[in-house]
Amino acid sequence: MVLKTVGPSVGSDDHSRGSSDDAHNVSKLSTLDELTPLFLAWYSAEMAYMNASPLSGSEDPFKASIGMQPLTGSCGEARRAASHLLAMPCALRGWTHDPRQSTSSSSMKFHDSRIDKSALDKIEHKDRILRFLLDVHARKRPHRKRTEALLSLLLEVDSWQKAFAEDQDLEAAIAQFRRAEEGNQAQELTAEEEEEAQEDLRSLSTLWRDDVEEKLAAAAARGSIGVLLVRVVAAYNLINADWFSLSDPYVKVKVGRQKQTTAVVDDCLEAWL
Image (cartoon, rainbow, N blue to C red; front, side):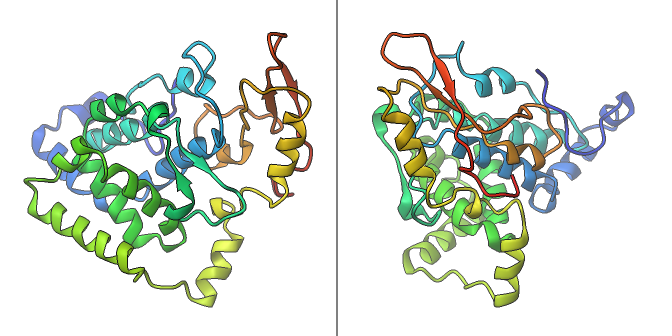
């Protein structure tokens, strides 16, 4: 399964424009709004693995579908950076989220034994990804809690710290982000912005209802779960891609050594799904 691009495709003429045009395109990374839905789609995919045990490559539909295949488009370098960003869920399988709490960094928990840090180390374009996330964090207020959680994680990894060690501008931007994070100085949303965020179907803070954990626990009570995977169908609407199947949300339950079965969890997501 091949990822579709967001935006116009690139022909041979685009590739023949030379390094100057490519450099100009790279400079637009901080203002390229089409990368924002790519990031949101990545985050949605990671949320879909909430509380899930790692799957092997042969069982992992998400990993098999993205397969580190490069994205192509009018901004080659920017899109390659985005493709690496989309590959992160394969490395961050230890990310869990408590749906009863807000999507702030304090509610994100990591289990080092389940994080493939070597995969994080191998991700390229670290500096561009950090710039992209910092820009989204600065310009997209409804998504700040999510960008804050992701940036906080990446900035704890040694190889990602080295990515901005010799870049004074990036280092200054990260220092500013850390000061705001530590002092909780992020500006509060205005009443109008809060209303817009609630109406925005892409606002992932409304993804899980309070009772979803109870419903999943009820499914787990029927047997020991080896694999727990919730497919979030709404994520399909975030980008024009075919790597989310159009089916109802479901939970895969493996009971002991028996054959894996599928238990549908009814009404566990908001009505708009």
